[in-house]
Length: 249
Image (cartoon, rainbow, N blue to C red; front, side, top):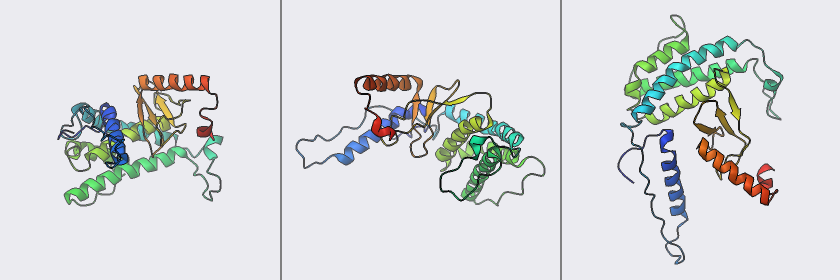
């Protein structure tokens, strides 16, 4: 493995998967078992960060952060206290009733995420707490503007990777929540990750990737990888209709 820091973006998905597989194989390797050979590290090279995110991804994060302000406005406009029947469902056995507005919930969570990152970065630099927000501009707008002002420094700091990944994730999910421009649909195939296997794959119109929304997985597939896996699963089902029955149970 080279000394370069791999960009956390989607272009290094295969690189991360290869190293995850190598680490699992290394953990399973028993040097006392003569039937086993020590696994070789993968030869795939990463797309390097500059220094953490590559320039394309850094630019994408800046754009997605700015667009969160538009998404916040759309969520605020639809937080009218009305829910559809499907929104009133809650987990069986839960004593907590649903709040009157899912859009309002999403907006509050977005505000918590944005203000949380501002606080973390201020603490990292030993700066004072942020001033009260909401008088001169909408609180989300003021916080986003502050984060954009410091974005170059944030993206080379110790929080660069986690910050960028969460901004990209929130933008994807915010588009769906706000019903902004593009439709997000659930794909019928189960996630191919062995530790997931859930019906949690989603695709947003125009995107080149399909995302698993299981928070314990977050697998990303290219459209070509999805189609290849779908064909493989269809072929398996033709030979054995019960092949995935255990997964569906």
